[in-house]
Figure (cartoon, rainbow, N blue to C red):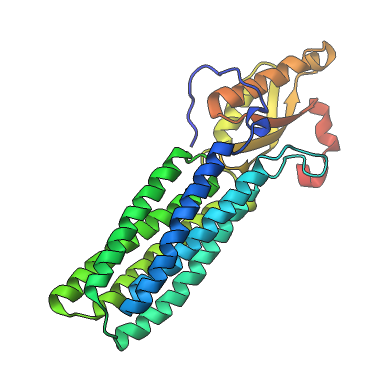
Length: 315
């Protein structure tokens, strides 16, 4: 729930909408992290084949989704930075949400494939080189820590950045699990530790996929943002001078951190007749921007008598 943050801050109602969603610096950071992960992924695939490790192969498969996530985020950031047009009046900012949804789906698919294979190897384990697991996964921990540091410099304001970071953080935990599996195999010869580590990776991928799909799905289905309490918004708006009632109140998220709100506002006859309707709109927008951090809003001002003309779906 959004809380009252004190006196309203006077901000432009369209500030977020017209600002570029991603900078060239952010795209350079994406490219650097992408190059780092691609290089290590190739090395890990070879190492997995030589060591006979499903856990390393699962990690490599997860890194492949990292590559797709980074490439998608890179492309989405380029599209999101493009200016608005008559064809796309909001620009292409929601591409980052689509990229996050695709990331969630790819994580889900890879998790299912690796999970099926891991269960098979758990039933019939194969010999695995424990030392190879420790060395390769240890390097993977370092690579992912560097990638996380790079992505942290890009910030976490956009869903695409958060989605990519979720991929890489999940990879980090997976490599830690693989290091532990290698240590167990080296110390005790328990070969099933490799498959168990793979299943840990699968659970991490499923958790990350669920989070991305729920977050992106809420935006794509235009659900009310979690941070917006419509009842509280209505109370604030109706407390303003000349505002009699508010209906048809809707809030949704255009893209990451950009909530949008629209409403029909019944106002006094006097403000419509004396030309002060513009000041009413100013107060409505200042209230939303200052108290609720909603800076893109659209209002339809109506006299009380207009209720008789409302269409049934707008009642």
